[in-house]
Length: 76
Picture (tube, one colour):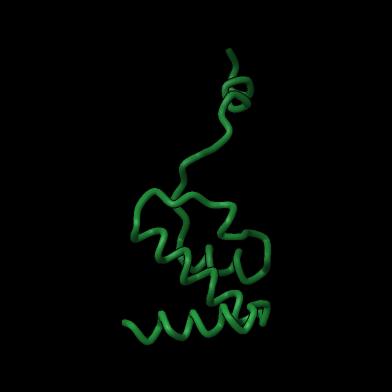
């Protein structure tokens, strides 16, 4: 079986991405957090924070989401 055939059998890949690159992908709208499945709690929290910050920066969050973000930020 050639490598192209092997690649087509899998529906996902596991990769590591630099936080700044991930933030850039979120901010440009190229990638959405809903497209990702985090493998641990730390990664999930970081992806969530990057996504929300990107959302605020692009002013695409609803008022409810913005209030939730502020509430979560004040807890730290």
